[in-house]
Length: 434
Ligand SMILES: [Zn+2]
Image (cartoon, rainbow, N blue to C red; front, side):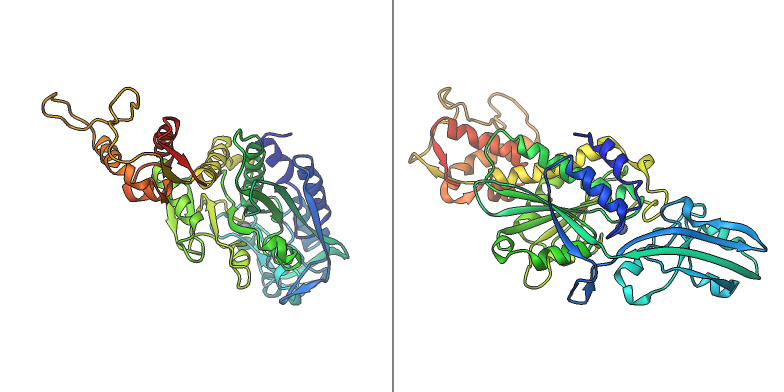
């Protein structure tokens, strides 16, 4: 078992792709962490216009001018545009430039290029070079020699199921197809795995079931959901997409398509009370990932995304372990577990009494003091809110209202409220009915 940062360091430098030797290697490494089920989809398989790519790798990628090697694309996993075809020939600078990709804001870095995996009909060649080099290219003839291999293979989707009391399942999804990108999205992969490992150890039994799905972006989840038995699919209630969680930035929560599902409400509540500097926006307004697949018609699984978008190294060769902070990964796990804990413990309450209870009586000891001029005390605004809550609370023990409903109505942090209400249970004044 690896720590999150060690696991990340093992996987992200690989030449990951939807289908590649190195992605198969990553699958092996991930299976050492959890006993995943591997779903395989053969190259060429089609669904809704998407096609499972062939197993791809680059073996040579050179640009020469006047007999001199001016660029070797094999020196870095991003040097050759993913899924580039082979090409050998002499081209003008104008023609060459049509096939060069770069990152104008990061002049010494390489850009991550993945378009060809998704638009396989383009059948084109391309190299990613530093912008600095691109700018320095002068007119003339360039000799290009790119050799890439396309073979039949299988795209692998990893799925680990953690059973709870109910079939209702919360899915954690992250992608593993970007070559040499630590934050996007091996940070999400390791966060999901660590979250599930800790959920397995949770002392109280889990009400919900959980599932991690680690898959190539879009392509993986498209085929996974298309081939999943309908019975299993019906159990998927919510999804959380996890990505870009290791960089040193505040958290960002992207809402599901409806924006008002339980997972949206819980995540918003948890983050606003525990990470007040977090940022929230509508569906697809922060990041663009597999939420479109989970939310697609016929599935309509509410999918929120957690990230630390934006970060300047995004989709570049600078997205490495150097920008990953172990404490940020740890915080991300804490957030996912915090959200899950609310969903797990939220309950309605049944009252065992009638009338008003003397809460300050030591036998209950449930009283939350407020301002009292006779004893000349002063209390915080926060405590005033808690005192007000106390005066209303017994009306919520009606078998209908949930702890989360109360937390939202009174704008009080859920876990503290849960602890307070749990004391009523310990005094046998109420019972939890969910
Ligand atoms: Zn990406």
